[in-house]
Image (cartoon, rainbow, N blue to C red; front, side, top):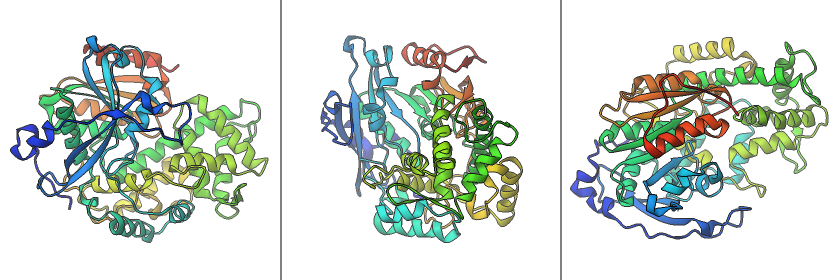
Length: 484
């Protein structure tokens, strides 16, 4: 079980020093791996938080920070914390490398603050598999339950001290310490994908300290990890079929001209990489696992990214070149051109498994989930056994949250804006509806269109979100926005 304690935040004398700490901001050091980014335009710092909030005097964790100060300090509203999702995504990279999506009033009036949550990136991080082991791990086409145990054992060996404390509940408490150290009486927050769960837990734990919270690409907190994985796979199946139907209308589509058979042709090719893997120019093998990962990665975007998937499939199916699809998979898995992996995969597993509820699925539940995927996502899961149902497989994980999935009400919070996209494959629209309806003060804003999250895919969504963050005005209930 993961240690847990009901936080009292700044009111706890044992936490007073953490809330009162002064962050030593300095220009961010240059990262030679980035292009067209001047890290010195940003300020970096470190926040110290308790490893264990139940025993805050025992040890600390470092939370790495980056901020872009408000361009108009005389009109400054405070800090806006941003989380890109994952879990395992770097908030620092979101600010420094992807910050161009935040413009106008947001950059004028807010200090944009990115942070790597505990266990992630430049913060005190989880480490499990080395690069060679991760390369082998990502190519496995038929995982057995022993694969999950292999990862759990590796994480325990390298990060055993941190592992019990990386769950989202502790990350939410870290955000409140950060709020206090930044001098903000309320937390203003923009969270994407998994970041919506982090923001939801914050609102549940600290409802009186919520400022303006936006949760885009919402995770349903009422479902367990198995249910979430099944529903996500069904969502990807729908987008995969829409991609294939669109492909046959384009030039250089390798899936033929019949929209009724195009998706099956693509799925059969990707499944066939199990028996006949392709060799990339660097000598690595494109297996079915890597091929599917590469394909589904391109479906996170909207229709504009489908062109890349068409080209990748064309190269592989007609040109017998694996590099495109393998490159897409590498991008998702956090592998750079030198074969080095970020810790995102390790952190993803550690946080997801720590968050998974106290009850493991029964054999009957596994069989039911497998049948549901075969019935509703048959193209993507034709080869699945019950061991393929998990992403990640937490059955061998030593630490689990004692709190079961539940409706998050956050009674007493300020208004919270939830954004959902009707064609979102990674976080299906029904999840946004569920989260918004459960919140005591939630409002749902809808984007009509494909792709994961809405903020960067609709000028209408961006305008409504920015307006809420800048002056607190919510869009009218039931508002729908078109994609760009």
